[in-house]
Length: 340
Ligand SMILES: [Zn+2]
Image 1 (cartoon, rainbow, N blue to C red):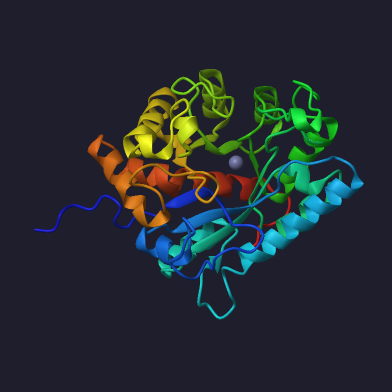
Image 2: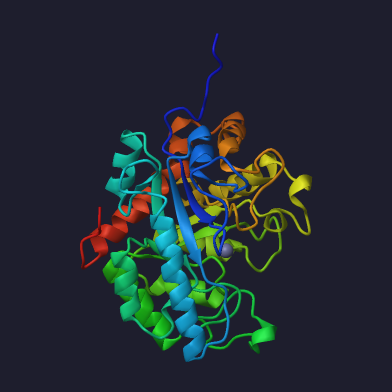
C-alpha cells in the first residue's frame, strides 16, 4: 500500500528565495543552486517569490543609482526564468496567476525586491517595479535606508542605533504608494519600531517573508511576541525561515533539522493561529538545515508538520493559502489593477 503523502496536491509557495548574483548557475538545470526549476518540480513547490536583493550601501546619488540598476537587472534575471516559449516557469504576479500556473502544472515565478534602498528617494520607481510584477518589497535590509530603520544597523555605514525612529516621511509615503500599487509591505529585516508603524499605517496586512520567532531564538532579525500579536491583529503573516542562526542561537545548518523549523511554526501557530503563519526558506541566501538543504526536499517539512498533527486544511494555509489571501487583499485594496 502506498504511504499517505501529506504534500500531495498542496499549492506550496516559498515566499523568499534569493538568486545568485551576478550571473551564477542556470536556473533551468539541476545544478548547484538550492532552488532551480528541476528542484522545484521535484519538491512540488508551486510558486516562489524570488527576491532582487540589494545590499545596503551608501545613500548618495551614486549609491542609489547603482542600487536601482542592480534591482532592475536582477528583476530581468528573475523574469527570464519564465521564457516566452513556455519552457521554464510562468511569471505570476497575482493570486489568480499563481493558481492558474499551478493548475497548468507550471512553476509560478513571483518577483520581489529585498531592500527599499532599490528605490532610492524616487517614489515613482515603485510604479515601475509594480509594472514589472513585483509583489512585495522588504522595507530594509541590514542597515538603515531612506525609508526606515533596520533591525540590524550597519556600523560600517555609520548607522546610529535608530535614525528615523521607525519609518521616515519618505517611508510612510512609500508604504501608501505600495498599498495603491498592490505591493505587499515586507517587514523582515526592519526594526521593531518600523514594523509597528508599518502595521498601523498600511491599508493591506503586512508580512515578514522570512523571519523566525524571538522567544525561541533571541536574534534581532526575529519577531517577538508583541510583534506576532500585532501581525495577528492586522491580519498579517510571519513566514518562518530556515536560516540556522535564526532558528537556534549560533547553530549551523548541520546542527538542525526540519524539527527545528516545525518548532518555530508550532510556536507561531499556537500564539496567533494557523491563518497567520507560512514559510519563506531564504534558500540561496543562507537558508537550509540538515535534510532540507534545497527545494527538492520540501515534502520533508510537510511530512514533519503532518506528523505533528497539522491536517490538510492547516497544511494548505501554511504552505500558500495564507499568502494567497494577502495577495488578494492587496489586489482589492490597490487603486491600480494587478497584472496577471
Ligand atoms: Zn533577507
